Length: 636
Image 1 (tube, one colour):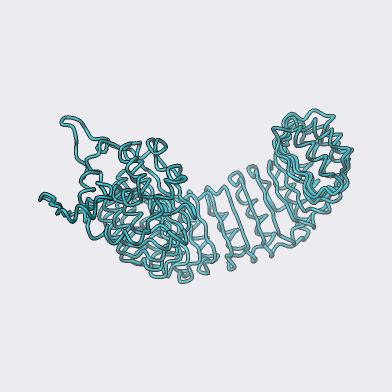
Image 2 (cartoon, helix red, strand yellow):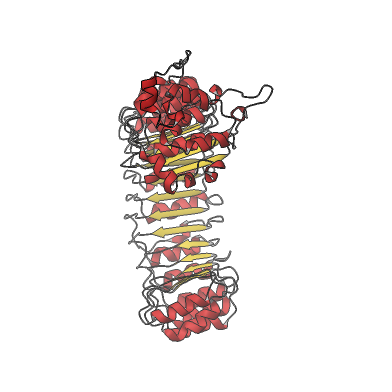
């Protein structure tokens, strides 16, 4: 019982026998009575005296006296309890008492001492967060939170993740939160297939401070729930609806009419949502709307045009899988000149985004800094180059599976951006080929700091050599998985880089040898902080000796599956590397137990050491090393 006195809604209240008591009563047998007898509008009361015949008294004399009281009487007793501690203690008696207590709204509690303020009337600001995952997501726990958290700072954020297949969260649990937690500001429900309109209506009726609502894969929720939210929660600022097949335009239009402060809307995979819902949200919140994410919706160029016209404060726009938005829609969105504050645009799998449309958006969004294109199969070199010529503020370009873009477009885009572009990322762009280029027509970039080329098999040393000359200010380079890159191409980057390389990822570059790594260590010794050589099978002890000698500021080193021996570990140990915190040696088959003393000495500064798949290292020595390195996590 004392363990429940200070309960704040955590799981500790459900332990041992007490937990068994709370869960012992079948939940489904109680919920219909609750809905029938405890309407928020009117409650049954017992006004007359209790009269017991002698026969009745004999039959019930073995019962605990308080158990003969009807639920209405218990309700009247419970709402006169002095404060949270008393209510928490009573809630621990049985599940019946817990659910009765959770049915009491804060405003229904009665002062018990004249002139004193009941604890339930203390204004809660919603400081507390509760997250229920999987099996922990039950109505019992929600009821306990509603009872135990009142007057203790108030529940501000409730996150529910997944279903409990036996006794999952239902409308009854949400109703308990709606009655007992008026300070709730954030409600997020993921993969909860058992909640519906009734529970969310109770939330709306009792939680008028709600600001953020996330409904993700909640198939029973319909427009009726959004009607209630719109009617009662006018301060709503963020709305996420994903994979809710019963929510459509009507619900979104209701939100648009009654919630004028929306700044973030995310609508995904809702087949009933069309132009009317999206257009209403975009137009009604034009002065506050900042972030828009739309995915796999049946909208057309009408919605695109409305966003382009009314999105005067939109800074982040993400459009994915909009099959019905044509080229005309994207062009109108750009020509409307409403997206003047747009800073980030991400478009994925939208066939309407063409070269012409991309150029139009570039002209109509002068402050666009970050452009991300994913599976835009129609965009070619012409569109990318035209966009970079008209864009005034571009800083980041990310191209993922844009197979019509070649090396000419990428290098021309870098050259066009001059002193603006800071980051370029290419992933799985199959149109890039390793062809010798005439670099004299290009203008070197004065601003590009980060270049990432991943899983582009056509990218080789010829292009990388041009990149080294074109991008002398590089600090971060990631060319992982490019087997066509050799020392000739990478040395161009190493030798031409004027700023000093800070992060280098060469994982999977099987043709990189000691020549490149020793030059890198020597020329960029004072700057290098991160180096990934995982899978560089031609890197040997020579490279590790150069790293140990020059790279005193290195913090993360990955030499997994490299051709190194115990001598390389000894080299790292002999030189002072005070910043080294992470060392990956997984798959280094040539290191043995002999290197363990050196790793023990080196590990005084390490926080993570990976020795997985080191077949020549015994388990006994790994255990010895783990005991020596108390502050370091050793994986083996």
